[in-house]
Length: 258
Image 1 (cartoon, rainbow, N blue to C red):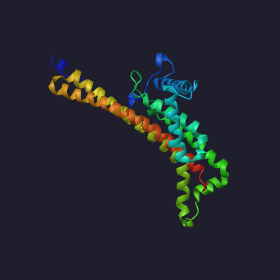
Image 2: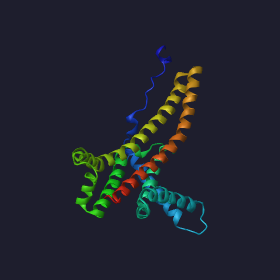
Image 3: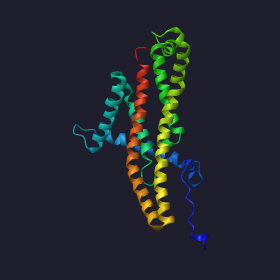
Image 4: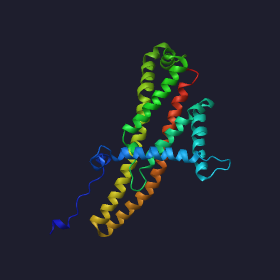
């Protein structure tokens, strides 16, 4: 009887909560399903927003044009210049796709940001890495691309001993890695905090009881709701940052010194 009165111990959320088994015994996991649904949602939105384009746009067309214009003007042109217009389709698709996978973390019944799994941001970062390196090499040639990268003019030659390998590592390794990890860790940490707030509040309300338990649980649940709204802002911000850095790397490959 004494042990029955003791509440079960609270198990805090951790990395194990980001692992999902196959759905209905298949190889398809929840993150995989979110990627597919996110891709379909983005494709449908872009198609629906443009299929009946009119001089006086409807709400859906206006929203699509506003978001596309934001990527074109505030990211591509501001970061690359007028030459960046040709890269707007890629950057806009990247922004919408990352935003959709991020925002899935606060959508009811879904509630998991697919970009918190490192494989997804890494794959997107590799695509950006391949694009900006290909652009730079095609523009000035492979040899000059590496020379301009590792041996910029106007620097004392002894400094090249340190600078050359640093620049090489930065362009070919650190850029895609940091691009990937920045998105992954932000989504991972945000989702973990939300889990802790909601599950911790539920535990305090249902398992501990008493005035203190109800008060603390209510505060935790309320904090989780507030954090959900903040997390939605962070998710959209991280989609913007990921796309902006991709544009900056492309702009760097197109710079005159390359």
